[in-house]
Length: 296
Picture 1 (cartoon, rainbow, N blue to C red):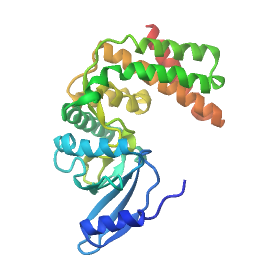
Picture 2 (picture 1 turned 30 degrees about the vertical axis):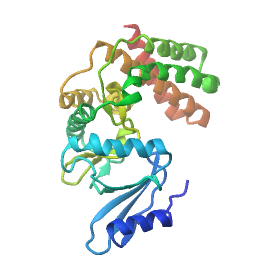
Picture 3 (picture 1 turned 60 degrees about the vertical axis):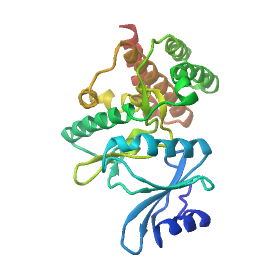
Picture 4 (picture 1 turned 135 degrees about the vertical axis):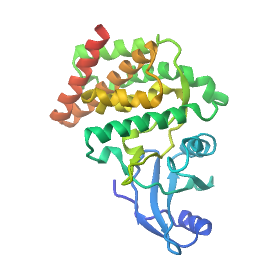
């Protein structure tokens, strides 16, 4: 997909009415997948901002609610500040936060431990913020059951890319999710943390992009790291939960293993469908390891 170099003219006009004359620093693709975003600078004083357009109304509502009710709990400099919204355009303007997505950086192991400690601390603050309201609060305990149903449905479309034994494992994991006990709920980020966590030149960590934020089991925010860096570097998992302030309970550990394995199975099938043998081999290792842990 080609990056859109500028916001649509009506959105740019709205942003300039709000902020003053602007120049676009960088166009954006749909990454995160629920929004387009552009980094802009105000020509009068060099102040930087981010203009975002949600790709569907739900994403606009979630991000707006998050900024108004939960994000301030992260503290100054740890997240963007919401400056303006336009429901007509599904658009938001937020302050710019310095830094590079953690997923794009090559950091030393010591720095990575610091990043994961701070990530744990930030997510703990977010999880404890906000208040579940209406159907979001009521539906949160059923999220894992829905994920189990989705995993079973997805198996029908990717089944040809998994062996019979792998398909059996996926179904077993999906079934186990339906019987996990009550899990801690909180206000989760819900998005890809590797690209949503920003590490700055002055060693500060910030969190942005709240299009998927919602009230749900907090374990869902642990899956991204459990599928990635924690697999090869368990010390980062320890650092994260030290910053978070607690380790997962028994039922959370079961849910995390199941969710991580289901994610690995999906990515294994996708890699095989694309003919990416290297990625497929890596995800097969993750899936087998998690299956072995389930049997212990």
